[in-house]
Length: 391
Image (cartoon, rainbow, N blue to C red; front, side):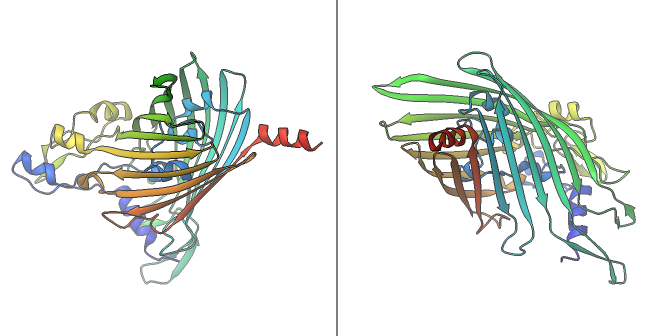
């Protein structure tokens, strides 16, 4: 029960952050000017493997959770069919009824095509409403969710493409009247467009090295609205990444991963005395906002570079059965200031895959601090093979 959570969430979603008064453009470089968007649950890493790699995943090897990072990877996934479930506690140090749940499923059509579907569900616990006199005025269980379907296809032995479609629903207010404004559940649709490259023919001496690269533009879609007054952007994002896997011997391998992320959202203009002083208007359409996002920062190109987030990960596998992972995520202090290390382990059995991850914040408190996330995967093909052996 949190009486003021609703007002806080609504305020974050509906009110712009206005830059401080400035008189010199150079001063903008050190000013807080984060991007504005809603449905932020779409930016959370839902699975433990990527969660242990500093939220890197656009170019890692294909797995059950490729939908979130790069749906084109499904075209190269091993196995015929698989299912996966992930659980992420949220704000566990404060409450015990907020969590992020994620389930994914993929099915290979043939040796070139794969389809997949996922459900992401963010349960925000229970909120008790009170009226202006502080008296009980009902209760609501807010939630956010997305349902995805994807299609991936190989175009050659090394290259694939994928597209995903997404329905988003965000019901965080229960139709309550907040600050005199009637609210409603937000609904939106979006799509991802992705490509993936995989080259496992590279030799370093007598050792094999696999180089992968990926690109994914995610959450390209309509705006979302919680009132009849204002519509907000979805977190449209450009992911670009690469990974190098080095096989040290027949049992040991090591993969180095790098991801770069940039929101394709207009940067809020900085105003002085209610008139635009630096930057461009952020009241634009989604396509305009995506194009404008590459050069509209009030602080110029230096501020544009501050909008890029970096993820670095390292993954070690022994006998393709046991994995140890570590990573680091960096976001500039003027764009959110999220900085954290991540660690995790993975275990691959004949039928099941189990992954765990843990986050260690550096600069500020994090909702995932002191929280263990886990993912459980099931390989249906291996399960069928095991059943045949038993029979």
